[in-house]
Length: 219
Ligand code: G6P
Ligand code: MG
Image 1 (cartoon, rainbow, N blue to C red):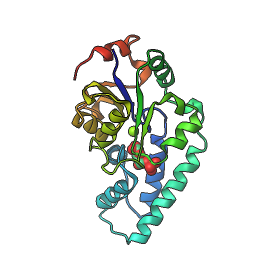
Image 2 (image 1 turned 180 degrees about the vertical axis):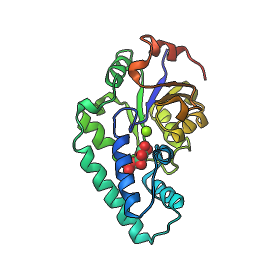
Image 3 (image 1 turned 45 degrees about the vertical axis):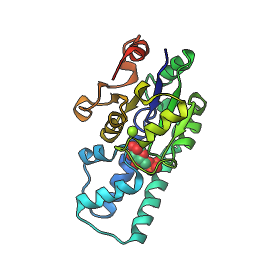
């Protein structure tokens, strides 16, 4: 049997969530806004523009449109500087092996990310060819927790949405997967991902027969 396997990028496939955090924190500081790790959890899976809107809301600040745009350009430049340092070693533990095993059993694989930097990052890591379909921040108009990104991925894989499994490290992403009617697997801390169908600290923590388990699993 087959299922569609849909992966978020940042914090699931590769350890870039920490770079986003550092860059947002610098941006917040430049606006005299205190920005906590707990608030950062709320930004995971959220688009660039929406993230800055939220930071401003939390800090009770307003800025003009020009400054808003400049801040986002600067945030992305700083983020991309950190991304430059990425190597295959930054693929999160167990992910590469998991992808290879999926390919071996000819399971359809997609990326479902809010990032506009997704394609170059996958290329840099040398794993872009492992994905049959890529849906990223340049393809969708409704950000997670809206299910659009995952529904598009299912369509591209020609898989029924009920036959898809989503791997996500963000609250918004788990909500998006659930809203799509897909099996949601949280990657990270249980306390942050309570709405997920199952949670693992990482792919290296999954049982050896987990792919078979997922193929049998119903939402
Ligand atoms: C992902 C990350 C977010 C990031 C968003 C947009 O969802 O979890 O932290 O803000 O993508 O990424 P981008 O690379 O386009 O700024
Ligand atoms: Mg993520």
